[in-house]
Image 1 (cartoon, helix red, strand yellow):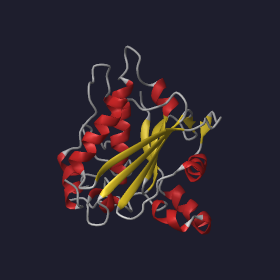
Image 2: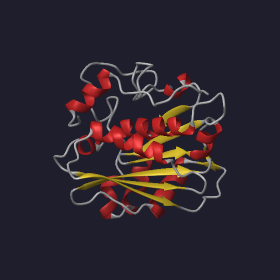
Image 3: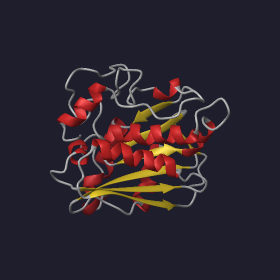
Image 4: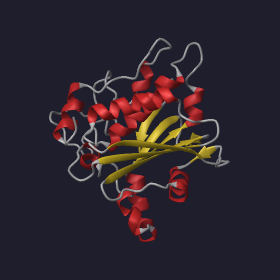
Length: 243
């Protein structure tokens, strides 16, 4: 299993330039480049509450264990005295065997309900029933408050006797992509010490860290939990308003 996580920065810059005039004013905060809201997500100085919206296509609802693991991860890393709320909703299939970044953005624009407003910062998570158009990618973070998980690719690489459980893989994806929203590494949360993998974008150079670019390559069927953030990533989060 050699699929990689990715993040879409340059492509989204182009989308921003092309479509900025079409964006509704109330949603403009949630359509910025990846990492732009790192401090807002980590600290309570501007937003005291986090709203997470998860929309999934039929057959790809995230399991309760993955959601509980994500909540535990977030509560241990961000300062949100107003709490963390999660809303899950099944949406219709896209009827797309392959999903492009433009498709993802179009689905979000059509379906997303919660936008950052008042004292609440919102994060949107889409789980598709298809694979990504750019290869065997498991997930991609694309806006400052949004990411997508490719459910079919997740299922194709988990759950079998010699593969990691779907729950562990889903937990890892959710937490890893939140790491990108948090600005790790050096994309919104400056590094306390240099630990960036210069060959693989905004990822940690420690292969045991949650933010390693190919973290899932080390999975085995015996793995019982998602990898953790290493000390360098944790230092970056704390320095930018997190715990």
